[in-house]
Image 1 (cartoon, rainbow, N blue to C red):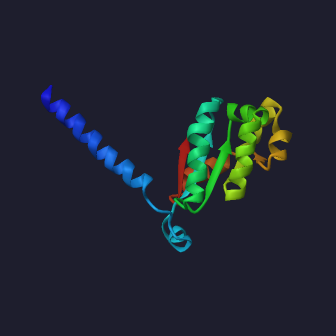
Image 2 (image 1 turned 90 degrees about the vertical axis):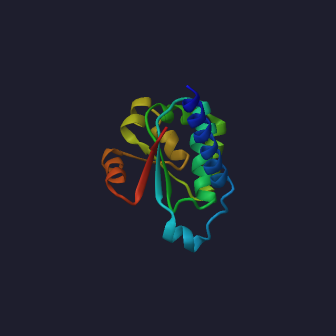
Length: 148
């Protein structure tokens, strides 16, 4: 039991140093980002507003602004399409992310199913069938796919 506790404490200390290093990491110069940063596709499926505000949007915006990635594409899929179409605060944040260079796409089958395709397009979201494109993100070693 004592060995397990020591191991857990050690892992927590290592995690704290890793997370601390990431949070204190300066933004890469644009040239370095082009050479080093990955392309990131964030697949946002949750209809939970808190997930959007405190995870999905926060990471997408910072990944782009701090140049952790070359490209950041946020794909609105499933219940997130309905949530975004009705939530004014989320819509305002989407506009800010657009300005920072985050690219927004939405699954047309999902947004049509919720009856919100037109609203998403008004917000500057590229609404299209995403199955093939998602498969390309996954298959391309230059892209890293994150799901929420």
